[in-house]
Image 1: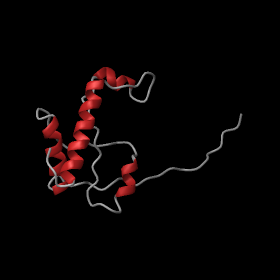
Image 2 (image 1 turned 90 degrees about the horizontal axis):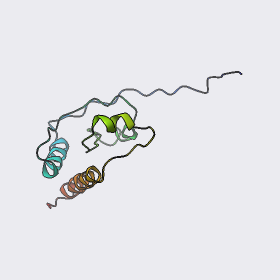
Image 3 (image 1 turned 180 degrees about the vertical axis):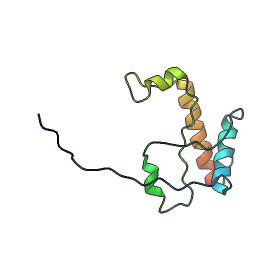
Image 4 (image 1 turned 45 degrees about the vertical axis):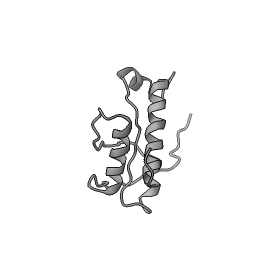
Length: 108
């Protein structure tokens, strides 16, 4: 068997997005509109996401996964039997809907 290096994947770290920005406040308002009992805070994403393609068109790029994950959920992440509950899926859809409505200048 022979192993060859097929190329190198390298991406620079993304810019830090401001939590003092109108976009973060809109994001926070949408999250609190659906789940008022959760803290809304920045989090370090240590993987490469498609968000890297938006840094050229937006000063602030936020990655959002509006789910409450249990330790069992985390064990299944990207593995066998990966899934989320219907309740969490519904909450995520409601959060994204609220975010889009707010961005369009509407309230629900």
